[in-house]
Amino acid sequence: MSLEIRTGRLTIQPFQPKFLKDYYREFTEEITKYQYPDPFPDLEAASQTLSGFCQAMEAGDMLELVILSREGEFLGSVEVFGLQEEAPELGIWLKSAAQGAGYGYEALRAVLDYLNGLNKYRHYIYEADVRNAPSLGLAEKFRSEAGERQDLTTESGKELVLQVYRIFA
Image (tube, rainbow, N blue to C red; front, side):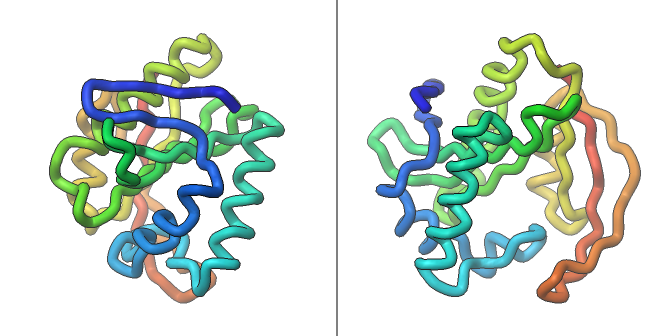
């Protein structure tokens, strides 16, 4: 996929195997504390999961995008699940060292601008655990509406309390 989105500080592009080690290293216990997924147990598990995402991206079902600094440093990832649905679901994470610098908003804004340019979606779903204040704040920077809360226990036993947002196009 040749998609590339540029902002003032970032380049956002489809995941490629050359980013696998960075993705694996930075997708830590701390990063996933309030997310459904867990860190990968090993590099092979990361490779299998991300290969599946790449296949789904090639099929037009999702976007698995890496967030890079202008210098090419891996900063994190943006996912868009359910591209064939009425309201795709957004996900984003940044490595610890990149948090708090406004990259999350910049990246999500750019991806939403891209998606809105397709003139296909009226809104998007974004979920954040109520204990993850930066993630909640990110959703609220967009024209959004907080909906229901969902209590959820993941397969690994994490207990999440997700605030569901609709972010409008």
